[in-house]
Image 1 (spheres, helix red, strand yellow):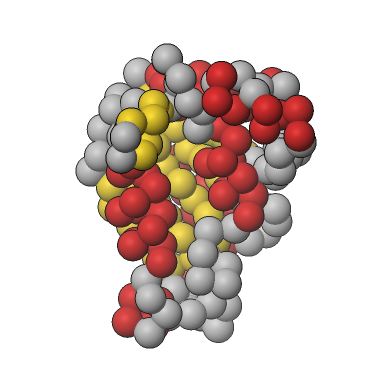
Image 2: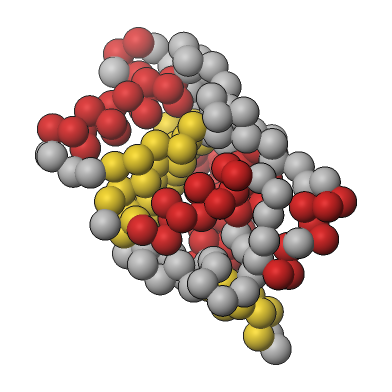
Length: 182
């Protein structure tokens, strides 16, 4: 089993990229095995074609990255998401990753029951969601509805079978000082 970083930011000079480098260095220092999925670097296409969507219920895909990503997810015990928090939500690229990679069927990420999706990624024992935002974290939590916690973490990730999920937001990053970012 290894750790899996799912990184979602297009700009290598971003604070998100600095977080990615710090997390990778930390894992290396601790001699932990890990893989990194870099959605933008991989040129992942987050949208469905009609053909791709027609294969969804059969748990199949036309995109080799989808198969690769799902295989990595099934083999890890820790997932670390590193992503910005844009317009009160995760970026469309990350949403598309969830939409396309989380396949139905036997040996996929979930099955469908009478009450909806039942996650099969119970191998994920720890999940860390590291986000950055222009808004301060307190503002996201108390005035913007806290969608990252209420939907992405408490609904989507738990529904997929992830457990022990924690979220840390680096809020107010756009106007922050170098000292704060360090």
